[in-house]
Amino acid sequence: MDALQIEGGPPLVGEVKISGAKNAALPILAAALLVDGPVTIGNVPHLQDVTTSNELLGRMGVTVSIDEKMRVTVDASTIAHFVAPYELVKTMRASILVLGPLLARFGQADVSLPGGCAIGARPVDLHVAGLSQLGADIRIENGFIRARAKRLRGCRLVLDTVTVTGTENLMMAATLAEGTTIIENAAREPEVVDLANFLNVMGARIRGAGSATLVIEGVDRLHGGSYDVLPDRIEAGTYLLAGAITRGRVKVRDVEPAHLDAVLAKISEAGGEVTTGDRWIQVDMHGQRPRSVDIRTAPYPAFPTDMQAQFAALNSVAEGVATITETIFENRFMHMVEMRRLGADIRVEGNTAIIRGVPRLTAAPVMATDLRASASLVLAALVAEGRTQIERIYHIDRGYERIEEKLNALGADIRRVPA
Ligand code: UD1
Image (cartoon, rainbow, N blue to C red; front, side):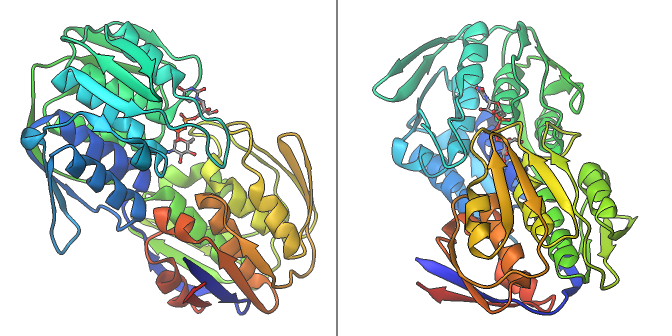
């Protein structure tokens, strides 16, 4: 297992090109199962989770090929099995996204239940309940969700909680259902919109994406085509914070600035000068220490839970005291304990962390526990005095493409070493 060694050091300065969004690429790869004919997906990030998705499709007998530009072509006409096995689902919860498409197009799906994960219980009950309402017969058996249906029938679905992959699963299933489906309290994340755009390019009839009400008129089939995945707003936000925490100046390119409104507002509040243009954002700290900022996570367009850990790192060296309140996941504070090993002053009370900024952090061995927690440790290590070793970085590789290369190009000192 590899580790990252990071020498804390100077301000990061320069430009980074942002990759395609993991959280859009994964549902779009799953949505390719709905399509009659080959689908070519561009701007797919080179990540472990994408490899896992391709493997999952491959095991089903789906033909997947990748060209030198990382364009992935998926042809589901060769499908032979309708199963997502435990060994893949347990490494990537987003495997659940094949449930809706398999059921809607082929009438059957056996998808392993994901179980718990490092950030909480994360149930999939709303996915299952919604598909039942669309007419599927679903049993939980031997650790699997076993779903069967003739043709799904459109209906009105009201989601109890805003769920991103839940909305996506139900939206995908409804594209091929008979009649119209209305999803109320739908997730409004840009990745949900990207999936809807992809499906519409392939012939689906989805309206309202980006609002809380989706209206999906079922069609008989979707046809092949090509589509480019939107930029990764979380990757972009993470590099901007790398600039902010080191008191440097970082510009991210190939991004959609509007998708980061809530994050950019917090960076400004922390003292960063934020400038945006056509598909770029720059943050300049002018060498100043950041100020502490209170964070409360909530569904889009509010502040994203996937940026919470990175702001914990920023607050740990900022001037002042701030609270971070996590409202989406019940156990997403594992990084706080690791950051204390670097000298951060953090107290956790329930779903709130109280962080008192310290003037300096000092290097120590730490362990990555989940994807975004890993990113926060990288950020903290960039300013900790000495050499920090981060173990279990396979978590980082699930969501950040070539992170050490991108950060080194900004002037960081990071090496990947066999641990
Ligand atoms: C997605 C993102 C993840 C992000 C999260 C919240 C992908 C692949 N992953 O995860 O990066 O952190 O959105 O923005 O897009 N819930 C239920 N029942 C369900 C489904 C969800 O109770 O059936 C709850 C969850 O436990 C959680 C909340 O709803 O408390 C939101 O979770 P959800 O939006 O579903 O997260 P994911 O889609 O798994």
